[in-house]
Length: 483
Picture 1 (spheres, rainbow, N blue to C red):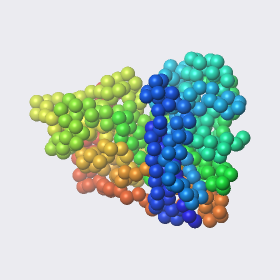
Picture 2 (picture 1 turned 90 degrees about the horizontal axis):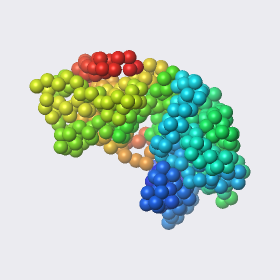
Picture 3 (picture 1 turned 45 degrees about the vertical axis):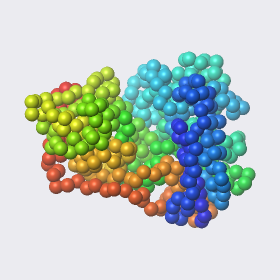
Picture 4 (picture 1 turned 135 degrees about the vertical axis):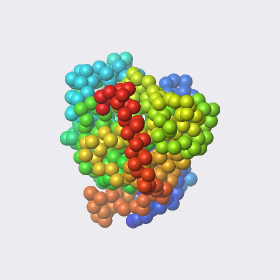
């Protein structure tokens, strides 16, 4: 079939991979950082807003040197939770709002109340408004920049905008169901926009992109280059990893997230689940935690070591950390919903007050907090057969030693790779194959699974069950009825 390209425009850089359509093998790749724009710190303004022209400059640099020569199709992955408010002529009314912008916290709280509470939002769109969502950004814009808000006529996400630019800014504007599901004004259950919620936030309705199917093409450039639907980074990474039913992903950043592939949209009355759509026609329910690796870093600093040293210490202790239990709610917590609480270290005795036991309690506490999040999905009928661990902390020996027993399932640690860009390339190959009549619109191309380390639960399952029970008992004692 030839070669296709996938580009990932993250918050700070553009990566491009050129792949063989049959095998998924990477034949060329490019990279370029985003140049500082007027909306970034080096440009003298806010880190949560930017001139999107910087994305195009970065894309052009990453694609230099003939990188895209011979490419037949391009897929676009881009940062999620961005918002490009455009006027009726397609020009920006202000810099793009991107990143984890917390200025919309008050606006998000007001939106929750305006619709009747968290359950009403969960039923309406599968998620509860939070500061990073485009929906909350719209409400913030209407409140703080009313003149700019009144000029907004069209709404786009970063990947929508990049696809539109690649196609020469046609009259037709498109998105995909994955990107749409992260806006806060698209229902995962019905698969349709909620323009009334845009009006609730912005004060008036705006034009929204056409939502394409997973294998649809957004269009073809004048040079004959097919552009696929594109999607958000999370959905692209899931496609690049080759996730399917029974697979979950645990992301270990400062905060944590757990998502799984499921056959239907899910909601949870308290809003613990964010119901996203994926890029393959399935769903990606997500549960977020406020604390993950930040609990490890805090403990490492307390003990005067780094994460690697903390891992070594933890492995010198035994399951249960001699009775020490760390509830790692250092920044409050989203799952369970305890936004104003603090972390707790329980079980201190003279024989447990040793560095290795505190180190182990930090790893067990972090992982048990993520098991709590995974159990929210399990309680809604999500099947979990294996868990992919992502993030640099997934390489720590203590994480790899403890995770199989605590999660109770096979653990997969994929080799580092540009999975979002690979997923975008796979989507491009899919759209190209459908256009050529050689692939079905309901099945993406079967590319080989990424290389990975695989860890199986051992025979010490009862010991890990006891660790888990110790954590749950402590949580219920200190925060009764948290779930």
